[in-house]
Image 1 (cartoon, rainbow, N blue to C red):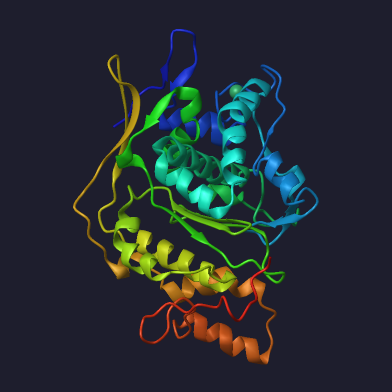
Image 2: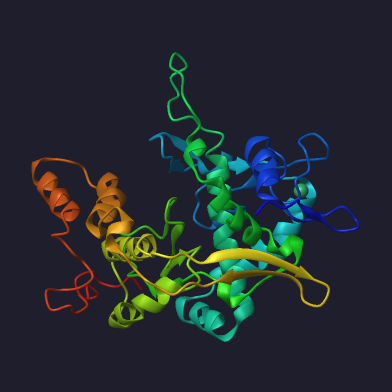
Length: 351
Ligand SMILES: [Zn+2]
């Protein structure tokens, strides 16, 4: 059903229509929060990964790998944002989020369990990073060879699905309440700390709308669009993970979560409801939950393979090893009896 954008009396856009979101934010580089046109006010652009995080992990001069196999400096990885929205984002999202994410694992985990407001903030922040990453893909071409005609990476995305992510990402601006039905699955598990394992790691899957972060010993995996369906199904698997995981175990869990989300047969339908009584609420209609492995169109092994293949130098022995991952013959989290494989003693825990 088509609808118009909804504005407040003061002219602030509460809700962008899908069409206006696509035309102004995706195609025409308007401020991605308020929709102000370029040059209509002061813009200072927004880092896709926030500045506090780039500083904490010394990432400014490091390279992020893009889907076109080229690299981009984290420090220059920004999207159009007006100065006012940038500072509102800082005050309402980044400052409280940086405080939460700087907590040690146990305190971070308790802060989420104890407060829906904290979970809601984390969920908004993950949607924000996912949205910014994909909006940026409208600035890059698949091929940088100017002799050939190339299309922008983002043109292949389903932007209608990204509209919901946009609504969540700007909830602080629109004063939207993210209801529990619209909340996605969030998994927080501890990671082994070791010199061979990066302290910071970020990865996402566009089609599945899943995102993975590692910050020190905290690993966060989130499904943005499942109304907690994946969490409910995988609770049993998660309960088996009783101690910190390795980098490959983390990647495998991400593949399992991503595959589970891609297998949902009838997806939740998200919508915005605005009333005088309750204000703006982001809600979801939840269908009866059914899964179909074939619908995923990819196996867990293939997902894991595409995730880890660039981490491993290819030679005769690793080629065989990678082929086995792809064919689902290698697992890292559980042994043949389905028991969790604890690597805590193999890799001496960093102190
Ligand atoms: Zn703005």
